[in-house]
Length: 472
Length: 94
Image 1 (cartoon, chains in turn orange, brown):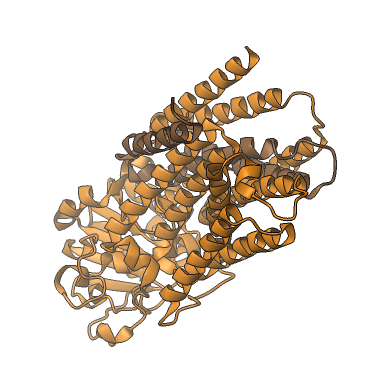
Image 2: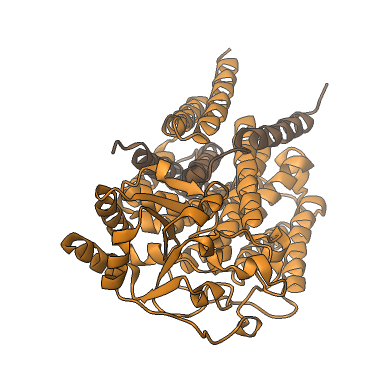
């Protein structure tokens, strides 16, 4: 009776996760959706604790207390500019937890074995449980170290791309096969207990290495794809853990996350006109020779001159990029927009899907600065409007406004959808220097007659603009 | 009669299709909160972790279980909180 009730409780939690995710995909209901999902999680934890019954709760309570403290601390303290790093880190912890569940089950099973050889499959209650445990271990470990590398790259501790060499895909493929083979051996080949533990540990270590070598070569503007994919993997790992502990709620919640991560991965790839395979397995850009190295027609202006131009415009579109996040210039941007709007100028923001380092990065950043989300316009909806736009201000974006993507078939970014800012009457590019973006190529936009460059840190330039506009 | 494995596989595959259906048309504005919310949901592995840390003894299995509980809890609590913080900004009156 109690068991049926508990199972029904899990079912209720699963329904609440589904409703929560559905609500999360609409702006109006998103917050409620998140609360639904959080309530579902609480329900699931309470049911599990009841189900465990009369046990020693000290370790559980310790884990819950430490986890809650760290989680709350990190979530409350993080700046919006640090969001990609934080999501990557949380994601890694989720993966690690799934791997640890598999490890714990494995070592508990080994503790009960006294024979000369161990039949892991039988001892765990079936080969499918053991296989799921191995997959949870492998996928969880890859998610953990992969997210760790993503975290280090996003917060700037690791610069550039590593493990880039000709045969790296073959090496990574072999490593992945190796970890799966070791896992299969543990499950299906009866070995002496100490040998079993050694092979299992080898599977763990190699999986951890695959996470590192697989993500290290990828970076920069490809980060949104990697983060989405790791997000998906953390769900898959939870699903596999669900098979291992025979809990359908884990399977359902895990696969929902797996699917959502995959969709985001797809959207990100499409926005860069690259396949997932190309992102994961091919190095990209970095060869300045494919573009024109020198610029011939770069015109520079000061903040004062731009402020004067702003006297004569009635429409402004701001194009934010990763540089805006780095300079933490979102509040100053909003301040300038407020001043211009007070003069009757219409201000909107054009958001490229892969601007920034994670899906939706710019939206979060600008929302923090109180920019109404109605003013954030998606690429497809604003591209038709640039022809009638008086001024476009590009803040720390580069490749996503490079017209080479439209008409230079031999350019590495050819075919990537871009924001057609070059069609606007006047383009102002705020940038620290003429250095190329992630694609490593020159941006022809900078040479156009209707483009002027303002060199400097985005925040500093915007502050100057704000004071100029105020004084005008 | 389906084996537990087959039932599990049915649930797994159907839930993946459901996930695709649920999230196909999510607006880009919500990509970050969706991802971080989904991320918190993947912390459901906490439920599995709880049953791994059920004794008071310092056995390897138990310690690994407790560690799993701690990490999954960071994922869950931090994930939901930070998602809520983000969504709060989206809903702010202007």
